[in-house]
Image 1 (cartoon, rainbow, N blue to C red):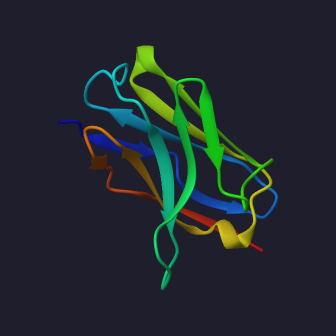
Image 2: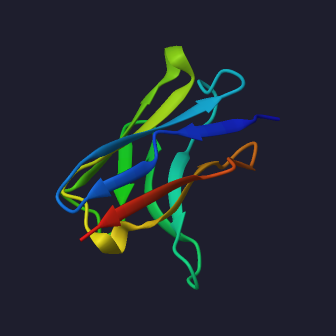
Length: 112
């Protein structure tokens, strides 16, 4: 079992940047895929980005603006978000595939 804690959300103007962090309660070395999802008010939760060994995957809406990375030594996954848009406003959640786990979420609000 693993617990995930997100941080780094906040309020930013359009065009700005934020870096989200997801700290795991134990080593993530053996966890294959970690990812970020988001859920905007009234919408379903959607995939933002995932990272596996040697591979990353991004939603089309964030390609070229967001970068996912992981630091196994720090048991942490990051999401660097640049050129933020108002439509990026959502609660962002960290996720692991095995063992399956979700964080509590961190709010990102982008003002126009």
